Image (cartoon, chains in turn orange, blue):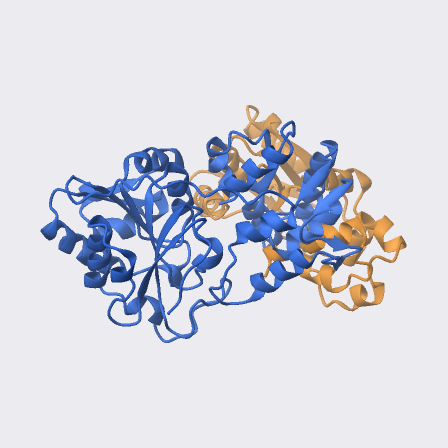
Length: 202
Length: 349
């Protein structure tokens, strides 16, 4: 992994990994601003951004949503060092998680997501060279895979609240509807809560 | 609407501390219910957004609902009444711990109406798409074993010999319950030509501003919050409204009401709780329709046959205090029905 920096055509910082730019090389500031504009900022209290890149999108997000509790996750520790060097005044305004590319999510991140339930935002230009890793991470952090559901609802799974064969047969777990369709014991508290919320997707 | 039922609770349990669980988007009602000690909020809009956004953790709404359930159970309620009749509330009833729970609820995840014939009757009436009574408040008083609430007295201040203040709430949250805005405008012109001394105010919410400004003179429109609407209604002689919450607010203020009941409105069940209720109801076969479905007709037949001229005649009849029988028939298939003693009965021809 070789990280270096350059300047974009309009004079902004660009970070490369193995010669691949992790943001626009033409106008990264415009790219960051466009990315933030697409986010429903007013309805987000806590966010976790996947991909630090050159950090322009983080700076813009902190500017547009100063009250958002922000965390950033990446697998390249050098990126945060570059961010700190270029933006020493705002580097302490978010929490940085650096995790390895192993198949399992470490407990520190799992507990953080369980406790804080952040909205998970994807800055895809910074995913270069690691697209599959970030893509799988997104599914895990939003609990849209069986492994995370089993971890989060361990007690309910053990108590047979869900029909596990139905759960495993679901093509994907994109929606609470998929969990509701796999319920077996409707008297369980979690099952009742999912049933209460059912009116929200009809 | 249920404010009067709240009064019945305090008659039966004078030392009770009553809490309400309501949707967050209705929090503006708090100043109108000073009898309620504490409000708890179901974050329907926020949780609905979360449920449908892929970037939000799948179980986040479940966890936050859990926090609400914990908050409710920490209160250690003696009695929980379910005043709604939605499935979701039935499951929520099971999650709340209390020695006595009355109204729609599940037991072990299954709906159970128990031995209460009143609840079964209410359930059947709730499911029936008709405009037959009794009024929901009568049902609820029976189910919850409370005294039948007294209807709010109407001021009856409409008078042909004075300048009347007429408020109009033209829009609802559901397009099938609306009457066309240009017809309201046409009626307004007819009325002003006949009674220029009367003042007409068009009420609306901020979200309705653009639609109203396209149709009505700007100086007739008042975009108000609930508190300000209440203040205006205190002085109003008549409210003309489609099926909205504003009619219930007018009832509390004693304002005379004329409801235009289109679409899924069922005034026999949900009229404002007043001693004298005026209501225009359509006679088309598809009325009343389902609350949760779109209109099934090519156009909104139920509201189309009422003309501005019809409304003008009805309003003039009210101002001139004509006897009921003269008001009962109007051209086409519309009827104006006046009800009394609780507003629970709507006559049908």
